[in-house]
Length: 308
Length: 258
Image 1: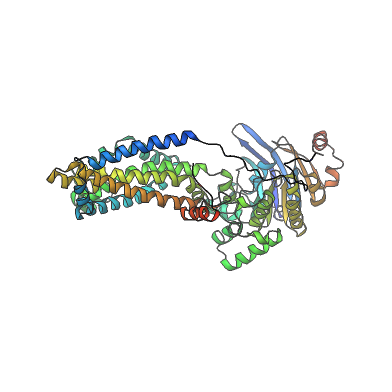
Image 2 (image 1 turned 30 degrees about the vertical axis):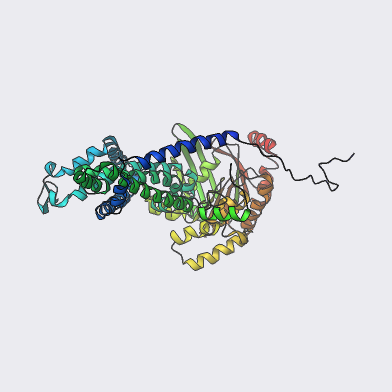
């Protein structure tokens, strides 16, 4: 008797089985949908939210000025922090004990004290060191200036955020460097590269794959941590909202405005991170990750049915 | 420096090397003339790879003298005094010695071509166009003309090792070191790599090969050196050492690998 499964040529039929059903997922969808509807209803009908006020201030110029300051602080602090962190990480791995010791103390101090305390410290830095001068140590100075004119409100915020960030970035970069196989630097040295070339051309590019995801996290934290400098009176996004609600007492609507903008900015960052990770992941897998656009195209062209 | 030393490509005199309290090399005497192909055999832990790494100063020797092409490795000598070389000078000497590793150690973030052109351009400062042309020639020579733009992970082990050989040759070295180049390969991929090495040997390149491939040693080597326990046990033409070993340790080893 011939079997139903195999054809004469011997190639079995393609399997067409009934897929497993997932009733649990459908129940979860219903429960979640109800909860979301209740929450949205609460938000929409709650008089305390004051949606007209939210809309009124969402695009106001004072909020926009605050956003600009938040972005400036984030970008600058992060850039300085990444440079400081990379230098500190390379120093930590130096065979010279003095060099690695200095880097260790830096990380120990700036990671070991709260960011808010550091911000306030830089704010009152002028009372600690009123004058700054440049010259021969313990000898004559060629140049001297009042600290207050150098360390402005913006500079003290920038110092606090970037020095603190550098300490965290140093640990991230160090982990990245250590993740690269030793054979890589050996091969590079055998080709006659100097320690600097090995770092710059071979080790760091590979370390990036490990460094980028936590750094994305750091940018995200930084964006939100800039709100701490509102305590020393620098007008960034949160402070802008505070200035308005201190005048009109519409606290909740303005905090919602601030949160909306923080969410918008962190969401944009997340998209950026995807593309950066994709770039540094090249060569590490046999295929490159698809962009959302490519994924959508593939989904449509293949006629694949997503779903539960 | 004696005139004998300067006519040799590699001249090791009573070389010792320890890792902490563990002495790995216990007085190696070893000479390679230009154009010679030497295979280093021996059980694992005998110090073959360590000795190979001493030759381009990836490891520092503790005692003895080691010369490459008449010059002391890692030091300069003035009178009786030795001076450690600066990093730049060590690096410069390494450009003249090619090295191929057991695990290939290609740079995974660069294509095969980029792996090959990196050092000639960045280290020796050669013209880009010239180096690229040479790299394509080398890829053709190792049978990978069509894989120039492939990343190492898209290549098989044997292909990666052949790119690694091309990468080392692109520096135009006067000496090539091979550290168990086929030990990490699937058996069916070994042949392609050995064929490339055989061609290289026939072209007159001076080569020191740490290997377990007795067949390769028999047909390609001028000299076979058998090491055990950090010393050279015996050396000579493959016909002597491989077919008619004098020491029991060599006999035991050969009977185990053959």
